Amino acid sequence: MRILFCNYEYPPLGGGGGVVMAALARHLAKRHEVTVLTSRAGDLPSESVEDGVRVLRVPVFFRRQLAVANFPSMFAYLPSGFLRALAVRRRMRFDVINTHFVVPTGPLGHALARVLGIPNVLSVHGGDLFDPSKKSSPHRHAPMRAAVRALLNAADAVVGQSQDTVRHVETLYGVRRHVELIPLGIERPTAAAAETIPALRASFGLPENAFVLVTIGRLVARKATSRLVDILAATRLPDTHLLIVGSGPDSAAIADRARTLGLSDRVHLLGQLSEERKYAALRAADVFVSTSQHEGFGLVFLEAMAFGLPVVCYDRGGQTDFLSSGETGFTLPLNDEIAFKDALLALHSDPAARRRQGTGNLERVEQFFIDTCAARYEQIFEGVVAKSVRSPHARTPVSSSS
Figure (spheres, rainbow, N blue to C red):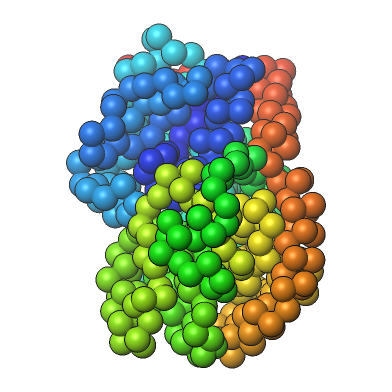
């Protein structure tokens, strides 16, 4: 098949949604012709071939940071992406479009499907339907809800990556249609590093015998990472350190909070890291922690599980599909910081429980690697393409003059 992925963000831009879509594209490119239409920032090339995937990046003009998006750049992506796709339609033909994130990418995938006369599979990731930390979340505004509802109904197939996301399609947007549930997948991590754990810890400025917590993600309001600093203080454990991997607008506030609480020497803001270095941080840690207010799925939890770490987080979002309190770590009521502190104290005092939960996570994560995810997507693509070819009412491309 000739597959066109549309996604506003693609690595190195953005976060987890783009990362998993890139892994999906790379895996499918082993058997199919795969093109990605995405946005461009900094000195990223306009067109490149990366791991067998042709990547088309369109200028959005208003974006200055790789990790943080803004509304002007999102809006600019829609016409820029549409014009770029029309410009390449003579030398690149496609059988199916896979649009990731109904907001902001949904209108682009829908328009291109209509113009090119091919089916559109719409993948929703959670935050594009419901983000409790943002006043701009589309579920809060009637015009946005109506637009999202129309796009969900118009797609040839809709895919959600968690039961939470699938449920929101109906409960928040009133869309009663079949939604495929395909859990996201991660690449099987390569060996983090040849160094011993003490050497890895030393490379991050950690004492050899420290109790090490790690968190990974964009430092934005929804992640509420500064609350981890408060919880660290509440444990009163002098040997505990927190590694924070990621960048974003909340970075300065987190550093300020650590200074205020006298924890600057135990809160390590590492910024954006390479995959190898990120894996090294996971391997150096004892527990993965997150105070995120909601996750559409939670790829970082899977990455932590793949390194045999217990996970402590809240119970809002798609991670509840695969995390279970007492088995994978602790999944706690939203913003119950006392329960969070108690969970960390319990894991600190019981290394055997940490090992048991970590070993269980290594077994559980096996079903969430990218090859399983890609096989499911492949079936859906083949199905909508076959239906489009068979249907007497199959779409006809809109001519350039119309």
